[in-house]
Image 1 (cartoon, rainbow, N blue to C red):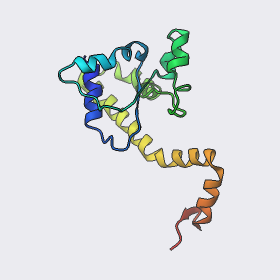
Image 2: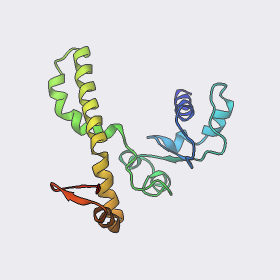
Image 3: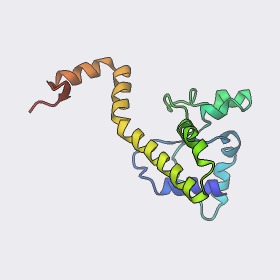
Length: 165
């Protein structure tokens, strides 16, 4: 019930105008999504927009621990419209947090929480700052002509491209 409430509230408080559907990547989606619509209909505080498709998926890190039929049905690689994603969010922080774990062992709970929060915030900041670069790389890989066209519209400016005045 808590997960159902969290899902419905996140959809309700998000700008869903013009969104063709929702992709829900959850570690146990093969079981969770079975009676989801029935649970939402029965829940007095649960509300999901009518007609909004929900595509269930299991992240690539977790789907390999499931039965074989879960891989074919729920792996993001095979879910139509999901693109090329791994479906994992929190697990991507582990490699960063593993580096600080030895020094946090002897910290108090409050200090450890502050240090981990600072490292997670720094990781999120780096992801946000680099989104433009990553998007340009993916666009160039997907559409090589796009990058040529974009550079044609720009003039060199100290090794960087800037729009002409």
